[in-house]
Image (tube, rainbow, N blue to C red):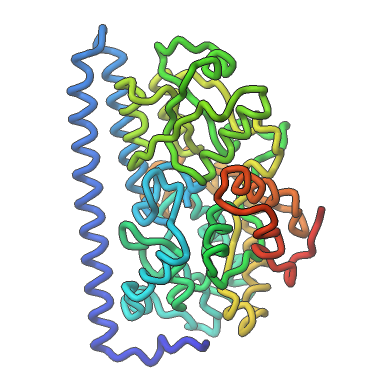
Amino acid sequence: MERKTKCKTKRQTERGQIRILARALALALGMAGLVGLLASCAAAGAGAATTAAPATTAAAATTAAAATDAAEAATEAPEGDAATEAGAAPDGDSEGSASDAASDAATVDDGAAAAAGEGGDGGLIPIHTSSKLECTATPFVVADKRGFFAEEGLEIVYTGEIPAGGTQLPTVLNGTNDVLDVHPNQFATWIADGAPVKAVELNIVDPPEDVPAEFRHMRLYVAKDAPYASLAELGAEAGIKVNGTVPTCTSFILNSIFTHNGLDSGKLEYIQLDSTAASFQALEQGELDAVFIHPPFYYLAEEAGYRLLADSFDAGLGAAAGTYLYAFAEDYIAEHPDNVQLFINAIKKAQKWANENPEEAARLTQEHIQQEVRASHWYYTGDGIPRSYIQPWIDDLVAAGTLEEGQLTVDDLVTFQFEPEKP
């Protein structure tokens, strides 16, 4: 499937540009309203507190989280990431099924996406992706701004944000975008539904123990005045309400933390919320017992005085607790294997540089998403794709009854055409 962006008529291009501007304006207005609404809710809830100071702190955290959520409005979050993506399902954890994506694909405006940026100028090969105005943008931004894409003869072309309620998948299936990023469990549900996509490289992973804990994939917090001083005390409760949906990175990692520490993960009740800001508010109002969040929100939880009980390292999964993937449509891989290899070459350089220069990587990301960035993820820098980084995510889907035993294997999710397989 060859691109025809150069053949777009002037009328199509103008129409696409108008639609992109309209979507951007709607998103900006909507998020501005959300910030104001959450600030009002937080202020109202402050009256129920015994002292003014904690309520003020909570309101500030909630409002700041809403602002960060606006910046995260895009895809996976985070890591499937928390809360994040205006184009993702609530809490940024799940982007729906492949069958949903197939029906959504017809609604994605190809002309608008092409108008957002026609690649190919200067002899560089364009790689199209969503604009990624959230924390998972870092490898793309670093590869672009540090020249790693250009070194490989590529240029990244951001095609605009995914419309609210949409997913990355249809934009790759219909050729608007070339590459997406996603967690293995969400990716597996797409493939189980028949989506012709394959992962080609690793993105985020959980860092080794000697790396600062701020880079770990997720953290579990309880409110400042919660009666739990430890994970064991929280786990002793009859029922534990936490933000998230099933199956997502949230449920996979937190279930694993409980099981690894001898606690009953069956006690966990996942509550679907619209954002991390909403999760903070629910925690303050006693509607949640704990919140499970991603790096961009750690500082807000700390400033609010929330108590840290565990993080993704406590799942006992090693690097697999953070696994995030880059994927292309199978037909793109078949028709443009050289482009895929060049992308992998560039992104591996970017991930190595980001790990070695986290403050500068955060600054570049902040400039791209136009919101404060104090923390980032940890990225894979090895050679090859370890099966052990992906298999636990499939096993969890089987345990949850989402997949049948043997329905999918790592080979169904990943092609080892570009990076050799590892145990």
